[in-house]
Length: 76
Image 1 (cartoon, rainbow, N blue to C red):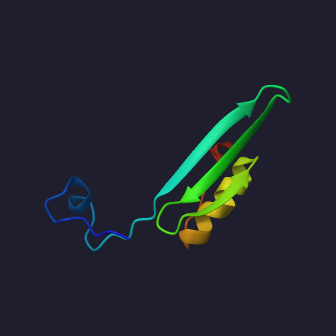
Image 2: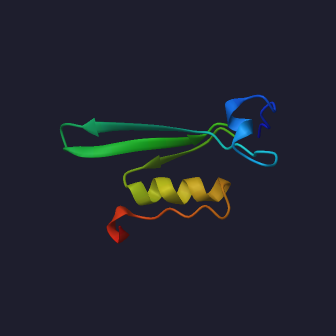
């Protein structure tokens, strides 16, 4: 968790302190099986999870960001 300095671009957009949660998402395609694979890592805790669907990535993200709502583009 990081609170940016008041003069940083990130700090100027928000009225109060900011809580950061950073992730690394790696995706690759296994050509022999023609399937996508992935791994998502929460950088603050180094907790990681393999994933094969976007829904699995979403489930992992919301564990560390309570209240985060991810909407699909289908409603637009």
